[in-house]
Image (spheres, rainbow, N blue to C red):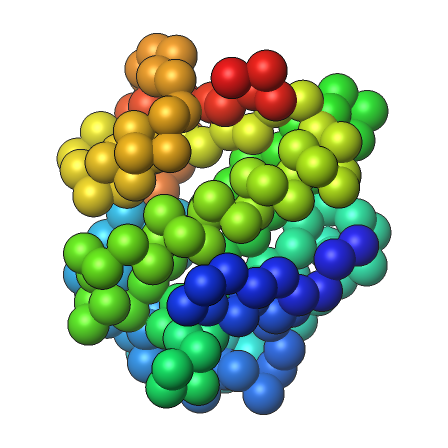
Length: 176
């Protein structure tokens, strides 16, 4: 499985425990975690625990999470990756989070674009999915920019922060 990707402005490399301090700063911002299926982090050990869990999933080829590093500053500005890798059905779900200071600069589109390219060209997947809360307008704009297709609303699809939430399903096929 891939451990690093490069774009024009970003270096995506497999997340490691030593990234926990940087990622904790991002995941402890309630604006960042508002639409994530986790509560706002309150201590760095939470970030370490998540990274260790993601590493276990990566060893089983079920998921891969990358730290997003801005090349110019060499700073970790977020994370992205493949959730729920399903090679039998040639599909994967993607996700991304960015530090608030880097919102609106095209970094999410750039990072997700590189995940798409790798999923189709190297992993030979047929479908990439993204599930987004309807109120998460910024993520929806990124998916639209990358020509994902809106497939519908998944009503009360999962429990997040103690309540059932709707999710919008978007997808992109290798033939799109």
